[in-house]
Image 1 (cartoon, each protein chain N blue to C red):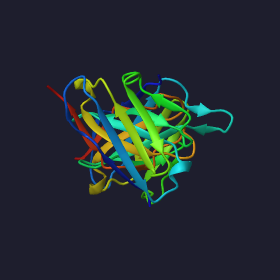
Image 2 (cartoon, rainbow over the protein chains, first blue to last red):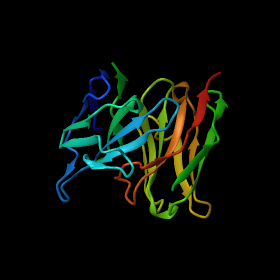
Image 3 (cartoon, rainbow over the protein chains, first blue to last red):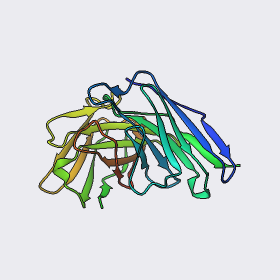
Image 4 (cartoon, each protein chain N blue to C red):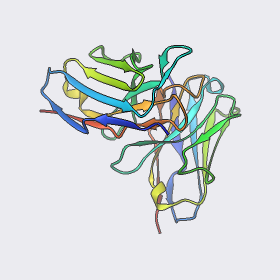
Length: 113
Length: 120
């Protein structure tokens, strides 16, 4: 199984500042035949289901604010929130869908400093 | 807009069975792969099972293999999860999630979840 490890486990950032969350996979999730990373980021607010933010490592889902961006390839990925807003308080999860079983990172809790 | 509504959760004793349903609307059900993902109280997300758009191929987490069965009915656009030999550690909120055409895609729509509690 591919193990996804996020860092940090929790993060406190001031409003308007940049927030960065990292995710490392135990093996590459880049499919060479189409040059796509089978990797996504999700946001989960309390009492709500997860919401897809980023897929193919860097493609923003429709309706997601452009302050959210994803980067990285193969085994190392980053979610960046360029200017933190109060509504961004949530737990963020990375996910690989390169191979079954699909696996998630343990989650990163993002709070306001 | 896709809508997914889970049902069938509840309290069951260890060793018991439950059948979860996920009624869907707002998208072409027979062209999308689907998954079940669970979340134990206060814990993270765990993928449980997936099924291709055709229903011909299914996938399971090792922790549920041989005990859970995923299926889909295109006549009523519904996804199912038959859960047998339930264990205390299966206690969780179970979400159904819609994927793309391939099972190797992210989940772009989720239901609100149905709670399964396994306890004596």
